[in-house]
Length: 259
Ligand SMILES: Nc1ncnc2c1ncn2[C@@H]1O[C@H](COP(=O)(O)OP(=O)(O)OP(=O)(O)O)[C@@H](O)[C@H]1O
Ligand SMILES: [Mg+2]
Image (cartoon, rainbow, N blue to C red; front, side, top):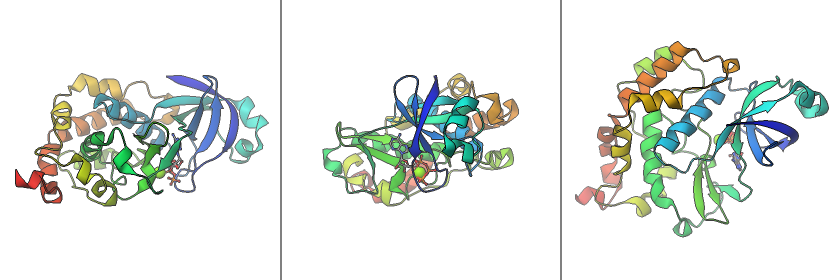
């Protein structure tokens, strides 16, 4: 579950959290979002929890681990020192050497796990992950295995600010998303009932599985148990609302709409 960073490689991405690539003590590279990233600490919890929730639905989420950066490492690497990176637990996403985002031209017809993108649409609605339908930057296509991977859940759960008032407000309603990075998958996932069995799997989750998914966050990420309780309630209530919300997308799916 945890690894230690051994060396800093380079910065990666130009956008929100400006992650950095690190080589870690399991011999693998991780794209690491730092505790002092400019979107805030909540990003780390969002990534970690959303990854575990994606796994509950058997979705192809990239692997996330807590990455420890030592004071010593910060002293050795000038970039880390300049960024004043705090020693401690950060969040890392296993680096996919062969990964390109969907902002590049990708032949989706060759993709081996494209059916799982129906589950991605269910998942994004459940966790309120509002940005994946509008950007290709949060899907990775692996050129060698021709698989899609989901990355970057920073904006889930009403965003990284961890506002429990907002979580409570949004526990009982689901906003329906539609955009180019859902639309590209329509021809591949359309069918008589495209979101089954993901909806059934989601609805069958019990509270203990959700408790387990939010468990074990480092205390340095400053998410209190009261905040986690609110998140569990948010997820528990919303899981039974996704089916009804997605019905509003039926006219986007030619085959589904005939049923
Ligand atoms: N596990 C990974 N393997 C390969 N590349 C990755 C991985 N994770 C992230 N990247 C690359 O780094 C970029 C930034 O990562 P991410 O999307 O998680 O952060 P971000 O804060 O949204 O930054 P950006 O706004 O630049 O997308 C991704 O768009 C992708 O190109
Ligand atoms: Mg991103």
